[in-house]
Amino acid sequence: MRIVITGATSFVGAETVKELLKRGHEVFAVVRPASQKLSALEVPNEEAIKDGRLHILENDLASPWELTEKIKGTCDVFCHFGWGGSGSGARTDEVLQEKNKKDSLNTIRAAKDLGCRKFLFSGSQAEYGMHSSLMNEEAECAPRSLYGEAKLKMRYEGEALCKELGLSYIHVRIFSAYGPGDHPWTLVETCLDAFTENREMSLGACTQKWNFLYITDLARAMCALAETDEEKFETLKNPVFNLAGSDTRVLREFVEEIHALCGGRGTCAYAVRAENAEGAVNLIPDITKICRVTGWKPETDFKTGIKKTLAAR
Image (cartoon, rainbow, N blue to C red):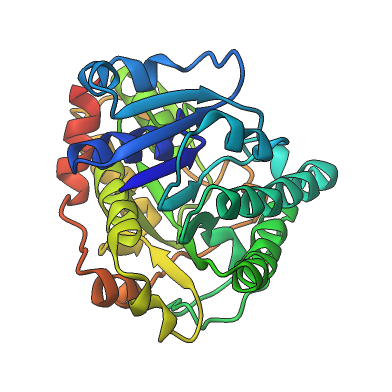
């Protein structure tokens, strides 16, 4: 298939590009103009660039219609992982989040013009808000940040626009992913930094339930959704898929496991750090739906994933 992917240099995007190429697809990787992270695409995919299966295109997220002039011929699937701003601070920027949603809706229109049959959007667990029980795709959504609200609005407005234009819409709610290439401010990366450098790690209470998904498993799931026949999606009640790991437990247990895998170096200081923009959210995801529809399942346990992340440093 010919697949377009925005946010192609992001943590999620770069790994998904690699997996799509591995499966033999032709990929149009859309990056921001003058991107400083092109090496995330170019270095691991040199052969695909040479043989014409990977095309790297500079294009601003605010003008997706320009892609119709840069991509010749029709495409099959559009994976939209581009979303302006990252980190806890950007999640409270109302103007930015509204712009992100508007740009994403315009991207659906561009996908239609490119001949795509399917539009895959990267949503977030932040759409759910506070829960203390198992979270399936029918669970109530009450986001606690403007970021979560914008992603949730995109779920409904994106589905409606795709229905109007004749595209299949898939909304993937990503839970906590980790692995090589992750953002340096995430919990896993900051723990690895502190422990490998024999420093103290300042944390929240870490008493909430949590779930982690290794980045390679995430990319495999995205590819499975892109490759699954549209007919399977048409029979579903809604287009949402939870994307998470199969191991859910108290967050402190994950931290202690990271600490042990770092040789017990450094120390953990609990209940001294403020919570993030959403507060102390429980993550108890149900991934039954994506496993049933696509046949995908997580393959990398947390211990193995942390070892791979450490080895890549």
